[in-house]
Image (cartoon, rainbow, N blue to C red; front, side):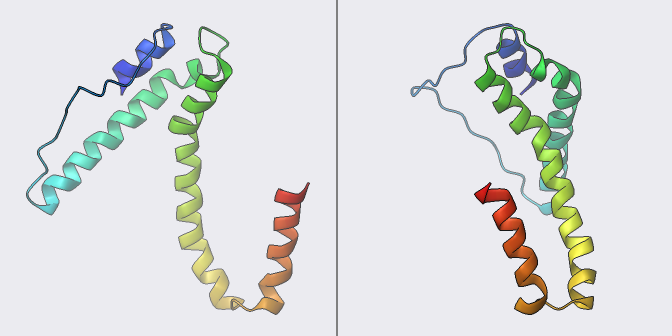
Length: 118
C-alpha cells in the first residue's frame, strides 16, 4: 500500500495488468488470522499518517485521485467511529426510546429530507 501511494504521489500511473497473478497463504487458525489482519490494519494506519497531508495538497494528483485517496485512507476512520458509536450509543438509546414510528419516524424523515432533498 505504501509503495503504491508513493508512486501516485510522484505522479506515476498504476494500471491494471490482466496477466498478473497473486495469492496469499491463509492462516490456519483464528489467532494467525487475527495477527495477519492486525498487521494489515497497522500498515494502512501508518500509510494514512505518513501520507495523509499529501492527499489534500495540490501537487501532481488531480482532484479525482485526491478524493479517492481521502476516501480510501481517511474516511474509513470516520466510518469506524460511526459504527462503534452506533453500537455503543444506539443500543442504550433504543432501549430508552424504542424503535417505533411515532418516535423515530419523524426524525428519520427529517434527516432524509435534509440530507437528500436539499
